[in-house]
Length: 44
Image (cartoon, rainbow, N blue to C red):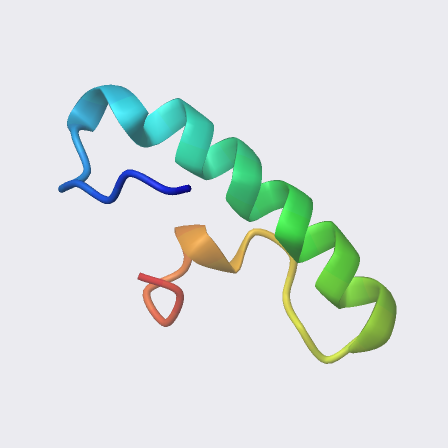
C-alpha cells in the first residue's frame, strides 16, 4: 500500500537518488538519452 503526499524539500535527496538509478537503467536500453538530464533545462 502506498501513501501519496505532496513532495517536501527534505525528499529531494531520495528523489534524486531514484532519478539517477532509473536513468542508469533507461540508458542501457536507449543510448539517445542524456545522462543527468534532470540538470538540463529540458530535463527540468
